[in-house]
Amino acid sequence: MWSEISKGIWARRAANALVCTLLTCLALAAQAAEPSHGDDAPTLADDASATALPDAASPSDLASAARAEDAAMDHGIVATHAETIGAGQIGIDSYEIFIASVTYGLTNDLQASVTLASTPTEGTPMLALLNGKLVVWRRSGTVLSVNAALGAAHSGAVAPSASVQGGPATTGLYLGGGIALDQYVHPAVALHGTIQLLANTNCCARWSPGLTFEAAAGVTVRANRFVKVLTELWLPVGVNSWSRGALDFMSVNYGVRFFFKRFAADLAFIRPVTSDVDPGFVLGIPFVHLTGRF
Image (cartoon, rainbow, N blue to C red):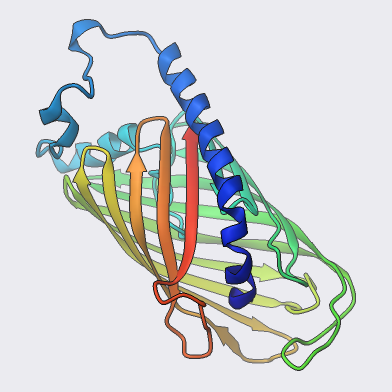
């Protein structure tokens, strides 16, 4: 599947540019609509404030400060983070065009999101997913949250081949949940971890009923006021009825995030480290994740 995605990844660069432009314009409009704070408001003309790292603060303030400054603080490159977007906030995410998500912050610790996904590979399901995230612990630089997901998927028929098990068109359901942890060890460094479990019925011709387990661990390092370096170790493992075994895949995801209060862009690579997966590019599969918050 990953080789098929990598073949068509560059064809979506222009579409990503259009989405980036649209989200940027909306974010700038939302920023301009906010009330002015007078002469005390920071500006990009202030070179020191534009490049300096945040001042050391008490650990209990780090999570709140990070959420206020980074539109994409609730997620990493691929994996979810424990943080939420905040009460009354609306987040719009675009993952390489074929995955789109809209999130609404019901409270400072509770958010709900709707995700629609359709990848350009034969037999991969079209997915609609409703997800809720609740922060259950927020103390001393630590954010712990639980989440639950309910969704449906539909897949067209797939013709059998030497590398693909064919099957008829199918429709199935997803149900799952998980836990995520953010730990701020420094104003410029945060550790992230998540464990997710997703059960599915007969969702598609390739992946019949089974379970998907996902584990991820990552580090975010803030380089300056507007740039972060992100790394993730991502391990999704699936067990389904026809294989009766583990379909394992592991990748190292890495890249940079350009972030503002209303807009963020992750320019990253997904580098599979399993021997049977060829990313088609030595650095990995290019991956762009755009976020707007309103």
